[in-house]
Amino acid sequence: MTLVAAIVAVLYGVGVFLLLQRTLTRIIIGLAFLSHGANLMLLVAGGRAGLPPLSDVMDEGSQVADPVPQALALTAIVITFGITVFLLALAYRSYQLTGDDEVEDDLEDRRIVELFGRHEAGDPASSAAASSDDAAGGDRR
Amino acid sequence: MRFLLPATVAIPLVFAALAVVAARSRTAQRVLSLVGVTASLVVAIVVLVLVERDGIASVTLGGWPAPVGISLVADLFASMMLVVGLVTILAVLVYSIGQRGTDDLSAFHPVYLTLTAGIALSFLTGDLFNLFVAFEITLTSSYVLITLGGRRAQVRHGMTYVVVNLLASMLFLTGVGLIYAATGTVNMADLAEKVPELPGGLQTALGLLFLVVFGIKAAIFPLFNWLPDSYPTARVAVTAVFAGLLTKVGVYAVIRTQTLMFPEREPSTLLLVVAGLTMIVGVLGAIAQNDMKRILSFHIVSQIGYMVLGLGLFTVAGLAGAVLFLVHQIPVKTSLFLASGLVEQGAGSTALDRVGGLLRRSPLVAGLFALAALSLAGIPPFSGFVGKLALIDAGFDAGQYTIVAVSLVGSLLTLFSMAKIWNGVFWGQAEHPTELVAHGPARLRSPWVMNGATIALVGVTLAIAVFAGPIYHLCERAAETLIDPSGYISAVMGR
Image 1 (cartoon, each protein chain N blue to C red):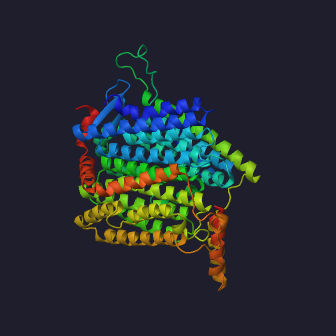
Image 2: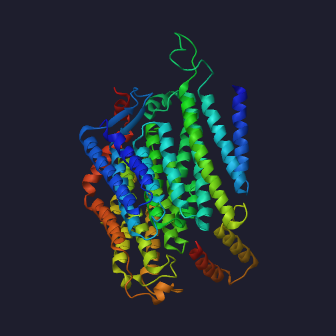
């Protein structure tokens, strides 16, 4: 059980690490790792392994595995599979449109960084330039 | 009740399947989704009336008794949210049928109906894992709706939306796993009895985990960054229904889980601080924007703060205020976005310096926007005023003067940014006019179906103001069952 818990921890760690990368494919694989971690954790939550919870196998007092977490994990697996496929399609569409797999910078963040740079350099025209930038940027969205 | 509660969820799902079959005929799809949503709304109204008369209704599906079988529960809070939500969904559906180019892909209507079913299920479910499933149904439909068409901006911002929400879902699943390991149940009524028996530290950890999970979906203060980024890129009808409902489903889940499973019985400093920051940061973000849709998107964040404030006070009056604010906010926010869609349809843009002087060219749109904006800012006698008054009153009663002051400042700033939209869009002249504003016809026209849907929804917000007394009374009764969940527990567990 401790071993499975350790595997869950590793899956979460790898998932979070990949999620913070800048390529869409890695982000998607990261999410897949995270969802596997969560599903495995649902199984750990059910306690020890036991006999299958079927009425003709169970006797009085026999140790039966808890069926609820298995049902939960099954549902969760189906859902995450579906969404992972959707994400892959979205990443492919993004590749078609932009030609690469990188996560784009946020325009607004870029503008704030530039504004800050100009402010540091003591450019008096910075605020006027920034507001006209804003107008164009707002429309592009 | 045995058939009514599941019916509100099942009807839209069945019609979604039929709409898939009817993919070739747009008229058939339109008729199917209108009939589906209307039927679901009628059932929801019947549920509300019955719950109001007979008290909390509960159904367990699959023939198993409560903690094992899947429960659907309708208390006053859930059934009020369901009715208001479905009214808004219906209005947006009519609007999207009137707007050219919104439902030209055959995926739109089935996905929209699935979204309806997901939202209905999230309000009615009495089971934590089923809440996860309901969220996934809602979110998966919303992923499709937000990227429908696959333009570049949509894909880029849709990706942020999907990744953030998927991360939240994984945290939710982790929370469900942990709580099952600790208590051996996922039924919320059962959890309400078993969670208080857990060690204090574990309770805090689980409570915080669920607050973060639902906080991401509700876009409360540190967790809102995905929202203003992704919402304005979708089609107006889609953004409108997301703005009105999706974040509110998150707020609903926060209120439901925190009152049922982690009740503190005293004002929670954490929630109050988060509420204050959400209000102020949201509205400051709105002021910094120069596009109508982006201003409104930041306002979604700001308004969530008021609902969290009501929860944070943790008194009957505070929760009643939060419920009233939720009920008022869903139609108001949606109608503001619908009005911005009318502006976009008429003028070709929603950027403040590219449109201007629409008051003369389209007085109807200006009037609709003004009514909804005044209500959002909380000017008497509109519905926002009633909601805010209830919250401020509750804040005074609880002795939380700082947060009351912060919320008043937030309201003032809201009024300021609404005036900014009004100045930019409806008064004056455009600095860099669009083609339509510069050389278009003297009168801007939008299809009467779109106008009619917006008028109807603004009418709903006015009706909330007119019937504020009885509605507040209902909210107060809903808040009483939230504060004291024993009725909820006994209704679900069949005792």
